Length: 280
Length: 326
Image (cartoon, rainbow over the protein chains, first blue to last red):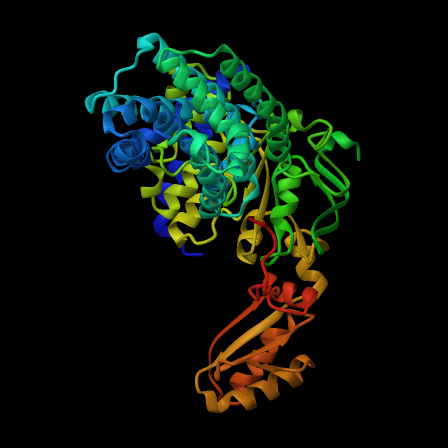
């Protein structure tokens, strides 16, 4: 073997490695909370290093708010100002619900890159990778909400529900989105490539967010469509958020959204965790 | 032998993906200490076997214990004692080297500052301190493999799985990885290494299992595997290719075996059972005034072993690589 030239440096490396190994005293294992937060920290680091991933989160809300208000506003509500009052809580809902698909995208990319298996081989609470990812998503949801609200206020939206109403609406959105994220985790674990995750999520999210009361009151829609709109979870979420923001909070709507979120989590979280544990 | 001496013990391990029996009844008994090599072509079932041993995949059949713990029933115990490094267990490319190792140290239970200190210590040990704040995706192949291994020894593992650690590396980086592996073994870690490279298994492994089509087709030390194929061979190159036929004939007579004319027009090789006879045979060639430019006497290479065992060369990959379904 022609190792002569490389003997020197590798020998030193070898000795250093042994020294580093010797220093490997084993601390007590990280608890479930600690490991979840550590994975949340990772999500923040990723946003720091790949700020492009915030582009969708910041630009789409701005575009949507402006486009819908000025293109459809006059036609739907007679004036863009009136429409904005109606549509902004809806646009907020749609934007944040749409962003939930990034949860699936992130996990799928991790699997693709091999990081997923490294993390799964660690002696930590296995679900902490998923919980940590959800913590990272919170930042995305908050940022997107902030963008929509700022643009909305700049072009004339005023929330009759006040700051507290808006805050509660955003909180309700977060609760619902956390539950929906479990569905995207399932998609992310099941589907072959990040592109396929995007495709699948879009196919679900487009009808779900558009065939709802997000952009227009359902009263003008045909009966068969109204039947769907009325039971669409996004409609329920949107109505609850709209109520909170526009000073007509409906405790019934809010309760339904909370129950729905709990139900979605109860159904999808175990499936996601099961898939996560047995992923080949 | 008591079970405690064994780092890994499997009986009839099976994993199927659809119709494909990726691992088809693997029996292994691997002693603690040293390097154990698992050798086989792409798609042979090496990675799938490791994934089951590392608790990432549940076996469809058979049993496996790692360091005395069952990989299914006592998976948490196994995970606390093993580490894995390989193409399928890498780091986060978007994060820096320092962030990656700090993250792992945090997950292993180090407190915030201690985690960072441990990460820096590892980066320095692996000659990566200068690149600590670079994203891992900017690392070269050799750096990448070093930090992957560093990530696996954040806490000292009793057993480490190294999945094809030098695939695609230049010779210098490969030697560095080999030195690191020897260092880890010296520090008391048992290593299970998979490789497609016979030379790597030859260099590092104390014992080797040859896997093909999800089965162990041979097992032993590198010397035993070679001996199972034949005692050795002499390789001769003649100065003038025109002399080759005559040299081959003479050597064949002296050694009483059939000479093999190789694709190199100046080369001929012969199986030998008695290495001491070779000197005399070469002397006869010299007496006839035929000149030989070089010769070597050696055991058969593991390449030849693999060819003899499987009927095809080791580098001939399967048409479909179903080892790791995406």
